[in-house]
Image (cartoon, rainbow, N blue to C red):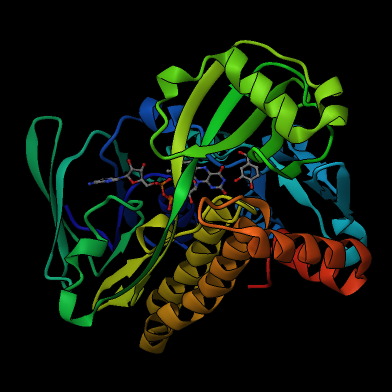
Length: 389
Ligand code: FAD
Ligand code: DHB
């Protein structure tokens, strides 16, 4: 098989990139290890920045997002009894949209056949070759056959554990990492949300987040030590913990119900440089991870894809090789700012095991400052809605 761009991974990054390239008439093939159902079964992000919504709109794939997505004009930071509302719409003139990653992926997946975007699900042993040349290729197994896919470029959209990043030689690689001493235990349930806007809470027992997927489906999180096992968290125990950490007002509005999904995700900050080497570009979690506080992971994947699509379009439509050379620097500038925001909101809203009274006093002082300063609120709001691309 031969194509212009071979894309590894059919998560949101890989599918979005595939659609953007097809919209420009550029040939590409997406190769995914899992089945489509497996990809849709992963419950992950829920909050979309305007740039992610705009990409779906540009592709004409935003009908369900516009009909079912919940437009959010603000969100809340809770600290004990205090609730600080960040009036995002007023402070920035922009909003975010609650629409699950699963739904974005489903919309992109459903439209692939009609847009001529081949997605090969269930591909085994995907390996990258000759990435330092102008003729890289993938090998993999598919439907019992050994396949080879030749391309001009490979784009690694295969998440944190995929093979693409590992194909870049160690001599040019640089990694930055911070692992946090807790994970987020998430619960999804078909109950109405306790509040129409998200609440991020810093409680003495730990962090909690009240989020949602619709008016009848809620998503909540609490942070737990990494040693915790999901089997030890009955639904009842999670609801009890949420009621304490979110505080009495939210607890009074919280409807409990059986979990549809629950899991623990570790928190990590990670950046890999460079995001391009030879004929290989990296997008999304393949190149970087943010802790989930602030909901940046999926949106950062979308902005990488925006830059990658621009670079590849420049190359194939205008013969502009500099566009490819400039990809990494453009993408990384935005990545580092999102890393900073996610890290600072994580530090502000979690109780770290090694923190003492001084660190707690710093949190209280920062929350006091945010509560009373329009400038501080604007800074948080403009990061939350997403920095410009
Ligand atoms: P992925 O969604 O990881 O997609 C990568 C794709 O590549 C997958 O389909 C995978 O199967 C495929 N792949 C992997 N290896 C191979 C291979 N060898 N060959 C072929 N294909 C391969 N972000 C938020 O903003 N809020 C959240 O609440 C949130 N929760 C999260 C919970 C978890 C457990 C995880 C892991 C992430 C979460 N994130 C969250 C982050 C967000 O979901 C990611 O940033 C987003 O999925 C990135 O999209 P992606 O397409 O880059 O990677
Ligand atoms: C959700 C996840 C996040 O990481 C976040 O910051 C806000 C919302 C969610 O899954 O709804």
